[in-house]
Image 1 (cartoon, rainbow, N blue to C red):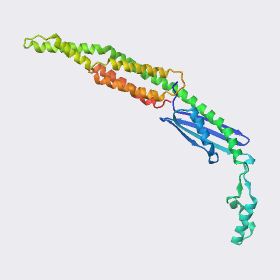
Image 2 (image 1 turned 60 degrees about the vertical axis):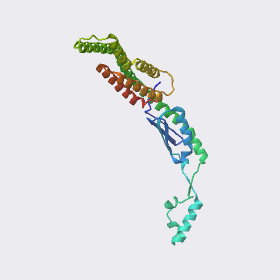
Image 3 (image 1 turned 135 degrees about the horizontal axis):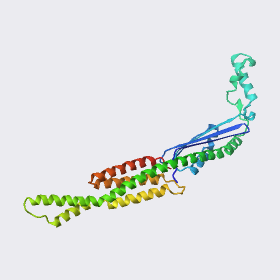
Image 4 (image 1 turned 120 degrees about the vertical axis):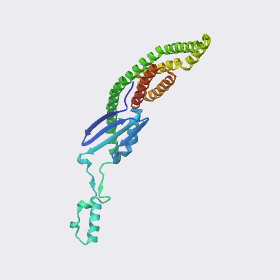
Length: 294
């Protein structure tokens, strides 16, 4: 099954005043690259979230963004009264003012005045419990979008493959006619030239020249290999297998172009050359499109 590497998914949840939102975006990349943006207080969860991504996606540059907030009263930090009082007394003594004149609003920013109420392990445990299912759900939404994009990608690639198959059939049908036409032209030219000196053309000479020409312009093997690559490509497009196929299609598109170039170099006929140009144009479009296939 072909899937695009472009997709988006999100998920969010609120519970007991805590809210978490997850967004996942993916774009083209030759390999899998994970970019995780998460609040610093939850940074220790990053390896676990990356593992979830890697178990779901095989290719693409994936960006996971996590935002969170806590509106519960229990989330408020605790004021260390002893530290606050100590700071106030030191400032009062140093500046020669009363303790009452010292601004408490400024003191709360000093080290040790505000302390976390909840245990760090408990906070991470709660975040892990909420985040992991949300990340999985957001990834499911992204994969669903990539699958829908893959359907359009498959249809476009199938159209290019059909064009190549049609033009290749025309080339195969006219290949023998090209040799016959060359033989007729050669026979006529030799008879015309030799008639001026009253000598008849030796049939063996014509046959030898035609054989050399036929050998140089023989494209039967290239046509056969190109046809086999088309069959393989179509099999990949129509496969129900869930494995990634983008890299295989990228390699096949290079092989398609290689065979097309060889056919072009061996085609002296103008009509065949035009057909080959159309084939190469379709292959170029395929090469562009498979860069977005997972």
